[in-house]
Length: 116
Image 1: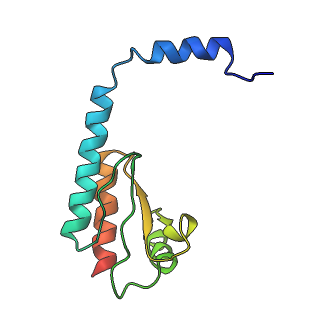
Image 2: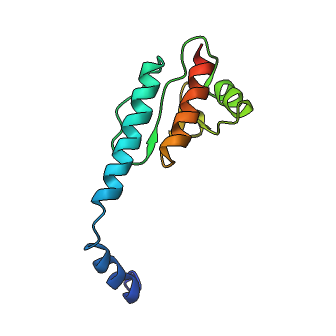
């Protein structure tokens, strides 16, 4: 037997191929560049991103483990995710840049304060 996607879903996928996503892609690229530049300027080590709308910065030296750093961020009303959820090491954290530029700037302000 064969299992495949339902017929209506297949037609939907074909129609989606004609949707122009260039404006949305450009918006996410701007937000990615904003968050990566802001983190690097604040002294964070950030690897280049490639696919999704997340960055995975390293917790700065002297700022504790990833989990400790995330707990302090949450105390400052910034929700970020500890990297230990995605890796066996507790040295990084994950940020989504699927937010407005204003929200990203507020998050960067918190991260700058936490790194001092």
